[in-house]
Amino acid sequence: MPLFSLEELDRAHAVVAAHVPVTAAYERVLLSAEVGASVIVKHENHTPTNAFKVRGGLVYLARLARERPQVLGVVSATRGNHGQSLAYAARAAGKRAVIVVPEGNNPAQVAAMRGFGAEVRVHGRDFQEAREHSVELAAGLGLEMVAPFHPDLVLGVATYAKELFGQAGPLDAVYVPVGMGSGICGLITVRDLLGLPTRIVGVVAAAAPATALSVAAGRVVTTPEAATFVDGVACREPMADAIEIMCAGAERIVTVSEDQAAEAMRVLYRTTRQMPEPAGAIALAGLLTERDQARGQRVAVIQTGGNCDEAMVADVLAGATPSA
Image 1 (cartoon, rainbow, N blue to C red):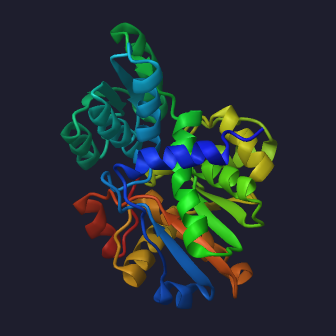
Image 2 (image 1 turned 90 degrees about the vertical axis):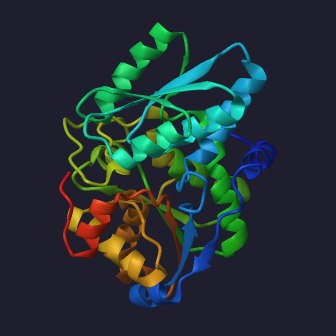
């Protein structure tokens, strides 16, 4: 049973389109030459929050305002883009947003969340500890807890998949970063609803392998650490519902090293003049590791965001690999 129907997807796209114009999907000729395949980049860095997640937040908060108007606001945990999404959408819906981030979180992300009106709380050494605290906080504040994977979030971000498949024409494969799974699950669901043969390939960091291990095992596998600088995929406890969808519909999950992720940031900048956040380039890192099998094909990569702080940009462009 799919998470949503094409009719529901069309309605969600109308909600998103009121805030987010259709994002570009270009075939980048220099990138195609580097890979040896026709490579289309879906620029989800071109949204009001510079990332794809805002689509999910808009659909979630629209339903909350429509069906649960007595709820005064939401609480969630994030490393960044999910929090920006909820902050932006909560402000649009006239609701309160309280976001928990781990210690040492990207200051630019925190500033953006606050800029969109969220109350930001700092707790825990990583996303998982922040997430556990957010559950307690929601109960204490009497606000609604937003899980990192929810059908409305998937439906919202799936609107970029609807756009991509309409923009790009036939695709042999789409490479997508995998954090908590909304992006890849949206792509899988839309592909299946449209009856397309496109392979969906997830990409994670080898230093945060929980999703890859889970898909290989066919069940949730947790890890004690997710020590990657690619904070958007730093997951150590995947969601069971997301793993089930990936097991059924993803071609495979590719793991890449920290050095490969940093190199992909440089390649994407050099060939598109778009500076990605680490998770925004990791899909390309996966494609670059598989360029031999992709040769001559027509593939897309999702540049999921562009929220990268200045110090990291300077380090990466100087040839360094940031530390976790």
